Length: 273
Image (cartoon, rainbow, N blue to C red; front, side):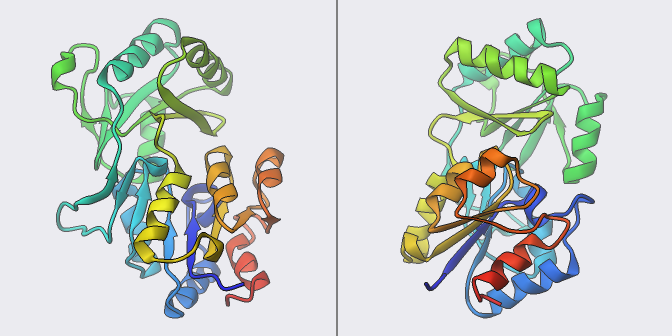
């Protein structure tokens, strides 16, 4: 089988537990890129959290941000890009979720993403500080409680962070509300929310057409629940060794963990390096 397009999640997949790319993984990705096989980063991160990783890898390809809600074609760090895909949430839904969090889940931090901006209600929050350290992206203060709905910017994604038990309770509450939104836990302490029609698999379908390749010529790596649709969509879906069992069951193969150069092993098993 010929692989012509590779997609990879970032956190827990490309990055190790220290949030770094190992030298072995970096060299392997550069090798497949030298063979003219695009290696496309697919993440829940904002563009500013993906571009430095692209630069470190020495690749210049489209990026999939916000788990499929925003796709940029070979983004330029020096200026704005015309998105290949840009899906925003209904402002009323954003407001409804914000009010729900404030009233019933005070331990949960609420923030949003609009194109390449991270909007936080207050920077003085342990969860915001933690995410800022991990993703190394700047934020802008926007008070969703005081600002009128009419000046809400287009929102690609909501991020709710908090203790695991509260995140599960919020997810259950949102399910009962039956809101027109898609939500998933990208880690036990993170609940990510986007428009219903935003998904990693839809972004992959768009990029397959963009590159004029067949679905049967695609490979994807992932480690968590928000990667499941991508792993199922690609011709070969490879789950990382550190993935939950449910994610592993959705994949065609399982490789080593992100701390053991799982991407490298996966590429070797398919004779791509």
